[in-house]
Length: 330
Image (cartoon, rainbow, N blue to C red):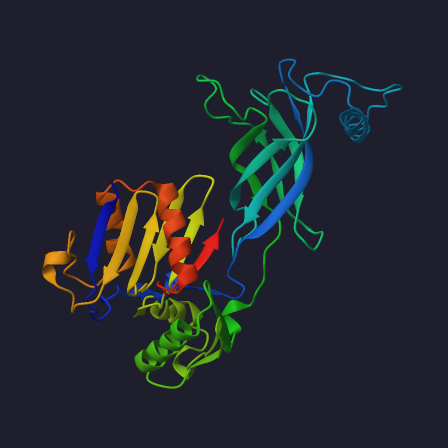
């Protein structure tokens, strides 16, 4: 016997959304991390290194020559591993500041446990050296059997060797980039900034960019200006969207998603979303609030609808035009 589900559709105003700090919605041009990368050697491994691979052997020969030694033949050791070292240079990093580094094997080493990274220069995208890394590796979960023994970290293992001089305090304007571009949200942010600062200082350029002119009072006080602006609060707009992962059976819905009148049959389920003028005796399940996507999902869950059924139902509802939302498959 088919299960019958009837829903009452009553339209109500959009629920009040929570205001979010501008700090959590935008990034500031120039204020970001910069990736660093370098090639190095990890020594002191207990027979779990690369062995006699060509790259590692050549690196050992080069290292010995740098130390004043002159090996006459190929050097092979299972206690050494070739690695790629990566790190993130924080914004406004200064010489002497310590940063964390990640060390990953690129050869056939089975484990980097117990190893020590030799001095390794780390370069930025411009090819310049910004940090020097070295030190003993930390590999988590060894007692329980780490699944990633060929990757380790060195907390504070990199030392910054070059400043990033952005001349930040001398700027006359700042550029704010919205993390999730949206015309409505960007307009709200600009309006809020202008109202709070008492002038037309924020100029939206497109759906994801605002140019913020530095007020005269804040010249050479950029830090103070940013500290104030980033704590202004706005209500970001949200696109009606349903994200579906068919591999895991996950469905995530967000935004103001309205459900129109529709009838749908899926397997043992007959779904009807009715208007307010229907006879009450016909309702098997009544939703007194506005019929939103979450209420529809809850109603379907009460009759034991599986995630696979939900995915199929919402894809069909979108195709029919019964829900106003974009559906994205991941």
